[in-house]
Length: 150
Image (cartoon, rainbow, N blue to C red; front, side, top):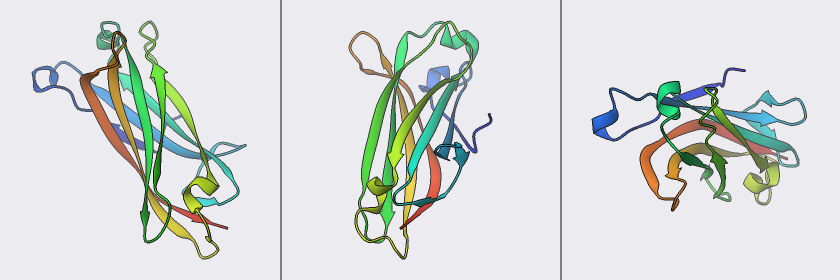
């Protein structure tokens, strides 16, 4: 499945010509897991994040991904962040993917009968496996505006 939103990740300047990486992001509604941008306060949703490194580079890096979904309200509303760590699969050239559960009530925070709008942004940072420090591979991707009602 191709993600609706794709963003390029950044590398330290010395590596930019040799490395490529992208972040793919979708906001999906359960149980069908279809992409959405208008959600109900009482619904269950998932932000699926897939991180793709060039296969040759991926085999050389022993790391994990720190993936966060941040919500910023436009107008009054609850803001917050949900994070997960994802082990990088060095032997598999396919993207590494994680689903972060986003309950509708997490965003609505009170009365949402007329709707509330949020910007969702995903951040991804590669952390080394030894002491969980950033490796200099990082990026972010806007899921875009999301409306919550109910």
